[in-house]
Image 1 (cartoon, rainbow, N blue to C red):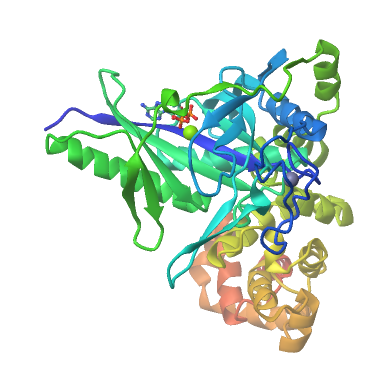
Image 2: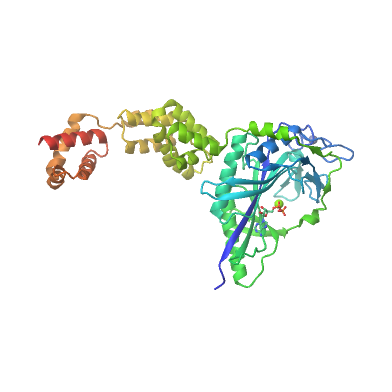
Length: 476
Ligand code: ADP
Ligand code: MG
Ligand code: ZN
């Protein structure tokens, strides 16, 4: 039996920042334009042109770095990272090397884990290759020069689940900063995963780097696969080689692509066309003061303002859209702050998952509908149990909860007389429970309510049923 091996995981996230123009030229960054329609001599890498740093890119980078608790570099320096690739017209990428914009930050995960951020640096994106099924490839350089911030963790993560949690938490922070649409499908948020196994003596192993990960779920799956692959390889006495591997989502496997390059392969050198500049302490402090409310702060406010538990508040604020949804609903019905949270974290979260929706908006069940559903319960029109079915029906039919209730003729019996009839039957059928209750065993009342509900097929108001049963038993 080989000694236990512990996974070691570090993630690199590339964030496309949503500036109107590219990082070193005035070309538009608009997504989805016709190929090669947003290019100029600078981003095409023609000789003799000069790049100029887009100040907004720098400000966005500072904002993210500060939100991640990073120190900001006092000197901003860019480097050329040299490599050849058909979508990289200059033959090098302008990036940051030994002086990244942000260093030494951290992200606190809801589970309590702290993930250290090694660096956050600015760079330009490359173009995009389009491999045609009939053979040959086309290049679209619209993306060349789109601003990126690369956010790199220390190898602090230990499981696929933790990697997933980190990405969710990071995305929540990034969304709150309004610097990117953080859309993995459009490629504005991309992740590479580095994985190795270490022995319990603590010696780090050789890592592989996985690319081509296009959802948080595939990141977790690929890491799990890679942990297993490397473990089996080591068990057989083999060696993990440092390489870049591609994730095949359909097959659920990683495949070797190329041996991983080392930093010295890139022949980094300072970009001579961009003058280094100093960052004033005052500028950083201004940016820090202007930081918006971050998810963690928002969660703490939710606890104070809406009397929620911290775990619930953290759950609600883990994504900006969910937090906005919650606040919009609670505004309409402040008294239901906890009930609304429960619906969002329970039934709605489950439906988002089951329907593979990536965010709450995709359910087409706006906050006003959730409020309507809660009002139907509070007014006694339907029971909580019925409401769960109304929700599903409302999601499926895209009709409002009220419309569903009306269309199906649903309504909970709040007619005291009808409940009384059923209650009398229950009392007759359950003499033992009734006697127990009379002896002071309060819990049997719930049993009797349950029996009554069964009789009325769940359509009786639970509160009224309880009241009627109690009344009848105490009287008789
Ligand atoms: P590169 O450009 O070579 O990928 P980076 O510094 O951009 O290097 O990223 C390296 C990533 O790999 C970081 O997230 C780091 O935490 C992670 N890493 C470094 N060593 C290991 C290791 N032995 N196992 C797993 N991950 C590692
Ligand atoms: Mg890398
Ligand atoms: Zn350009």
